[in-house]
Every structure is written in C-alpha cells, then in structure tokens.
Image 1 (spheres, rainbow, N blue to C red):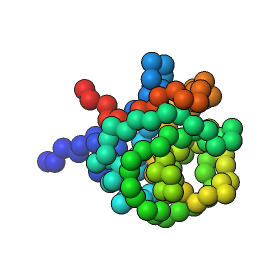
Image 2: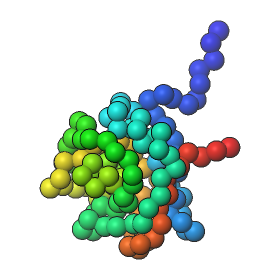
Image 3: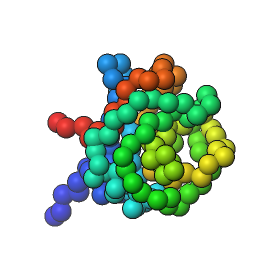
Image 4: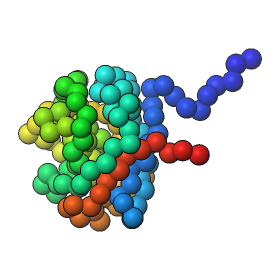
Length: 131
C-alpha cells in the first residue's frame, strides 16, 4: 500500500505575512501557470513594500523575472497574480477586471478582508511555513 502525501506538487501552501500584524494562508497553484509558479517557488522567501492599484489590488514588487504566462485580466476576490512588467505579486481584495493582463498564480485562504488594514509602505512577506 502506498501512503498518499498531504503535500502536493501542484499546490504549495505559503504564508503571506503583513509584518508585525497578520498572517494569511496563500496557495500557489502550479497548474495555473507552471513556469511562473516554479520561478516564484525557487525565489522564496520574497518581501517588499505594500502598494495599491486602486482600492482593489494590493501588490509588492519582487526580483522575480518571469514573462507573462496564461495571462488574463479578470480576477476574483482572493486571487493571486503575477504582473511581469513590474515583477509584482498582486493580491485581489475585490473582483476586478484589470487594464493589465496578469499571470494567475494562486489563491488566498481565509481572512482576505485583513488586507484592508494594510497601509501603503507596510512590509509584505511571502514564504513557506516551516514546522
């Protein structure tokens, strides 16, 4: 008999931390954009200052260099995307039709509304949770 692993190669559980404040679970999903998610996973942990695009998108810039993959411009609340032009990881606080095509990479877990407490300049960090 084989034992099934609870970790998955197609989904990676991460933590999005608003420094000194809140932690939100974040799943990167390889099937959405395999090359981009792989590049991001190899670059972890990632950290940057919070910025906003309007009132619906929270993002931080990274040094991840990955082109656009399976781009789309419609996202739902809780989606996570990569914007290759600014090398940014974007978190959607509401449903959005964006003027910029982005690479879908994952989904936030519970507590999405905690993002509304983030201030511009707060430090965001995304990393693997270690036991």
